[in-house]
Amino acid sequence: MMAKYLLLKHYRGAPASVNDVPMDQWTPEELSAHVRYMQDFAARLEGTGELVDCQALSPEGTFVRYDGEGRPPVTDGPFAETKDVIAGWMVIDVETYERALELAGELSAAPGAGGKPIHEWLEVRPFLTAHSTITE
Image (cartoon, rainbow, N blue to C red):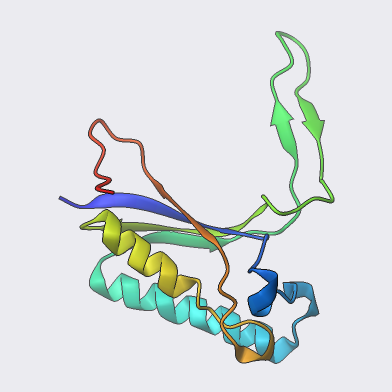
């Protein structure tokens, strides 16, 4: 039975001791190499039938919440603190939780400044279903 997982890329980046140069400081060539890695990764998963969808997101955004009947929604943002802002996402459909972790680890090796892997943190979240498939 296949299970869907959401791989979330955050703007928090990598551990400082690895390759923590912010993306807005990368050269055009470094940015192109990163995007190419992401596209090649997605194409490979599309070929194995494990890719459902993926998108990159802008760092800008607004938080919105309900403020009561007949009142406009309350908005806040954008925020200067971006460690929890989502940079992009990929939905995968894989056989096991271990496979989801394996793919997230590989995605974390996307190149950054200097062409070196960025070792960024990725969040792996299972889709909520009637029966959990996580086998930790």
